[in-house]
Amino acid sequence: MLQLFKQTQKSLFNIPLSNSLLQIKRFYDQKVIDHFENPRNVGTFDADELDIGTGLHGSLACGDVMKIQLKIDKEGIIEDAKFKTYGCGSAIASSSFLTEQIKGKHIEKALGINNKDIAKELNLPPQKFHCSLMAQQALKSAFLNWREKNQDHKCVSGNNTTSKKLRELAEEDKEQEEKN
Ligand code: FES
Image (cartoon, rainbow, N blue to C red; front, side):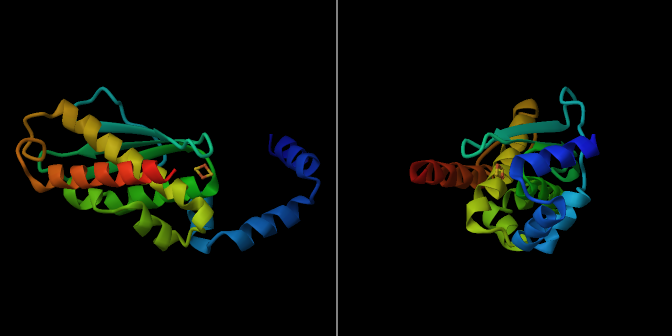
């Protein structure tokens, strides 16, 4: 399989594999390469479980898809997080980095991590910002899915900071859509 991939890559792009890998390594920051080669928290939870929130987000810019799942405890703490990403190295690194960052955090704090933080940490070039945005939006969708299943949780009901954070994120999304 690897051999087939190498042959296909060589014939499609007509460049020696060692050169193309070198170019990738020059283009991406070492942190992206590390997350791409050793992704953290890859996997899935049972989406039917009550304490699991599942978020799926696709990028209109490139057609890539990312799934983030959160396991949230009674206190609103993210006990565990998993992801599956069908996309570029930046998208894989963004989801791997984000799941690492949010584990053990209260959902309010986790929602405070935005795509600019991810892009800055991974040194993503501007043309790859949408990859980190996909991670932020998949996280938000996962939380919304969990919230739907846990309507009586204190993080859900009333005019609390989590709801405020979600309103801010919705406004940011709207601005982003208007720019595109
Ligand atoms: Fe599609 Fe990165 S190019 S998510």
